[in-house]
Length: 549
Ligand code: 4UW
Image (tube, rainbow, N blue to C red):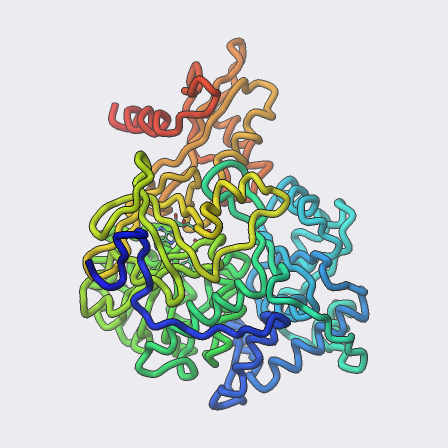
């Protein structure tokens, strides 16, 4: 067997050398990040640039701003260590500033997608016990109606107009260095962020990530990858079009890349018609995407002069499977750009695998090698035995990125973190003879729509709340553009005329737009096991038959 696989224990070890992680038990993730800033070659270079206005924050300003904003939040709102503060924000330069300030105060940040519905926000506010929220205009009323203290965050990073239009926020961003709070004693084991994910089953749950987890993500995922480049870190310009509220964007653009001194160009949202211009204008070198963004980019690139993409060195795709067709199309269209895949989960603080020498080895469909300090097992789902390279099974991973657990849900935690420390990913995967990981299928319930998670159980709860729906179940249908779309199977009351469109509209009114049901199949009963569990494989089979007939 290869040296990185032990047949006795079934453990795959990373092929990369181990990385030394800070051992100080009293270290918050923001301080860990700032400890690297002295290595930034040019402190006057931009840490963040707003893609729309070109406003920027330099590395020399960054730490002072974060410390001063933290002091102002403490002064104006009296937040204390352990309080939970919510960010319900689209991408902007304010997002990383607020996130880093809050975690440096020892407060716990919970992020929500800015398009979340009132019901979704309410669930998370109640579960996390949110006292204070920073949000954009769209969600101010929703949060206020739940009794949360709300601070409206402006859209533009133009501080002159913010001073006039939003003095409350201006007072925060201007900072409060005169009123520095006593440095809280934050432990690496304290929770820093609560992100939402449904894991392998059931409704979406709060994933508790500690300062240690965020530090691991910075050191093992971003800093390690940067160290592998020919020109590491500082000269790179990253385009941040992924949502910062999700672990993929958060781990890269709010934490990790700052520690290597890259410039991060922040887009409010991905819009392919602006992207080409932004890449050219800011000489973007690296662009992390999800598969639908890759497809849109490739399409666009075919109609644009190749010169526009000259600066681009690497595109990395993750959060959902990348089809062979997308890969071939991209590699054929932009052959000078290195395409890699990465794999991670909210529950692993995005630490998992990353592509490595992909172009040379032509292993485009692999998600790469295990990150340093991480271990894996491939488990046969019927016998429970641990499988050697070349065999498919459920992927388990172990290492310092793995979450502390699900918030207030020891049962779900126990089902997901097994044998003390192994995270069951719910993904079906195999390692090849070179140690490269391939994700081939998913045994867990989640639906991935454009890389976003949708929990079938969340949608089922909405569906059965309709007075004319007796029972319902949700599953994924494959979709070329979006990866997957949610399909609802609905048992309606016999006497009603409830239509497919009625069901779609009913759900759409209660969930974020990306989570809405996109297809409805009326059925006379939902296939269930004798214990009442929905037979999801059976749903998939019915769906395939619907499509083929
Ligand atoms: N191929 C197939 C993939 C892949 C994948 C993820 O919403 P979550 O919890 O988290 C994410 C994190 C994505 C991510 C993190 C770090 C990184 O380097 C990177 O690559 C560039 C991406 O999406 O969903 C986790 C689930 O998403 C699926 C898989 O089912 C996983 O359990 N998934 N990446 N490359 N499937």
